[in-house]
Length: 194
Ligand code: ITT
Image (cartoon, rainbow, N blue to C red):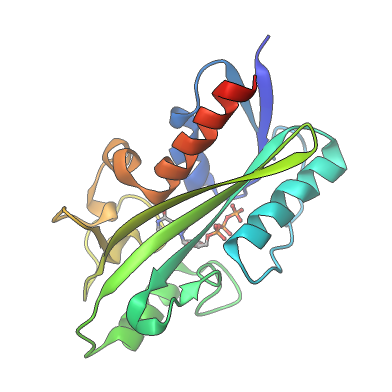
């Protein structure tokens, strides 16, 4: 029988990235599929805290094994901002364009463009929480390039590459991304657990 795991995200792009990385013997269910339509609170001030809040919310309400991803873009010259506030950096909503504009504005004239994406996944399995982290280092360029992906992808070039994440196919981003690295650790852990 397949092991059912709920993925606690309302972000369709994340789902699209994560689903192909999970082995076939797991059945990933979305919040929509379990009938969860509410906005899950993300009020913690760390990625770990928010990932756990999201996963725990689903575990407490639906009693099933689940995991959540919380991701932030950490820019060195901005002391790690927007970090845990990446989704709502410029406005209350998930306005990707306004968020990019704000970051580019803050970095205007600054030479140090170093940045990283950091994903933390919180898994709740049989009621017990575990964390998995994935990081990709790179830099923020001065103008948008590409239209794949989501969020800050058009202005982020990973180290060792010349294209932004938004210029890459999903399969290419999924070979090196913060999220793919965190999911790989999750998958390894699940292999040893079940
Ligand atoms: P859920 O909480 O429902 O999973 P979310 O969009 O709120 O979805 P996060 O809080 O983890 O997810 O993400 C914060 C923001 O960081 C997100 O809105 C994007 O702007 C950005 N982000 C996350 N992952 C990204 C990625 O792979 N590439 C570019 N930007 C990303």
